[in-house]
Amino acid sequence: MHMSSRGLATLLFVLPLAACNGADWITGGDLVTPGTATGTIEVVNATSDDLHAVLISNCDASTYGLNRLPEGTVIPPGSSFAFTVSAGCWDVDAGTLGVGDAKQRMDVAAGGITRYTING
Image (cartoon, rainbow, N blue to C red):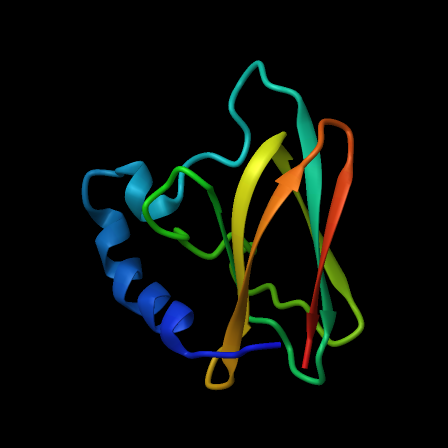
């Protein structure tokens, strides 16, 4: 896995901006658009560290957006976390604070599960 601190550093920069007028470019947009078919993105942690953040945005968004994990939640090594999203193209950035992150663009099929395994 190519790890960099840039994505998580961006997250730390963008978080204070979230209180501003809630533009989709800050949040990454809604994961599910009403009236659309949905699928699942499953983020699998195959590293030896907790994953602290998973940023997910529609491929048309200008940023990866904010952390989509519930507050206080991490993905421990050997575990996974599933996100329901509208079918289509998604950018996913998952990482560990102080270690780095991994990015992937993926297509999610309606009714399907797309697994993104983060290797360390």
